[in-house]
Length: 231
Image 1: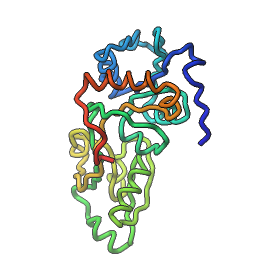
Image 2: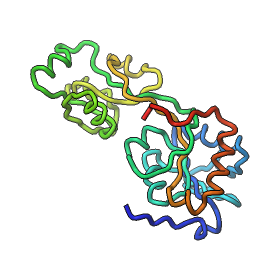
Image 3: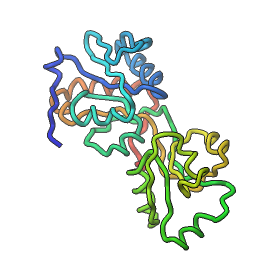
Image 4: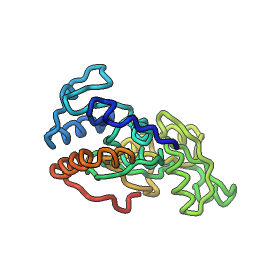
């Protein structure tokens, strides 16, 4: 990957930070505000994709795009889920575990399957797994020594085994209730995920003092654990 980080000097001296749309958005804004960051109009941005203050440009981004923005220098720092960071597998510097947005990757299968997955595997030598996260899925089953055919989907993964498209799924769950409602049972744990504060590698060099100072302010207001064995 060729680094093309435009640097903060081309942005009027501002740091550029990406915050994820969706489930992590409100907690991301809350943590930044509590850390003393002027979050400007982030509380109600409407359809704006960029909100600017005197010191920062905030980019409101799709969660799965954030690792790309960070790695390729579109932003200096960001908040992103560990799940999307692992799936993207790009060059970013993980600074903090923010402790919110907790969920877990699990393997699930139909409760009332006619043939067990173990029986299918013995017969076919491979099982079919549907997921939105092929890289994480392939790594998990490779570590288990199980041969899989991965089917990538973008919608409701729970449908795949119900219509015979896959034998198992790998998906994110917080409580397991959606899986249970669709008559799926959890059979294995893959990994845990929480929100992380990350930085572009070039920004860590060119804007080290400001990135570190911001990380320290955030660290002071959230219950943190350094990256552990969830990866």
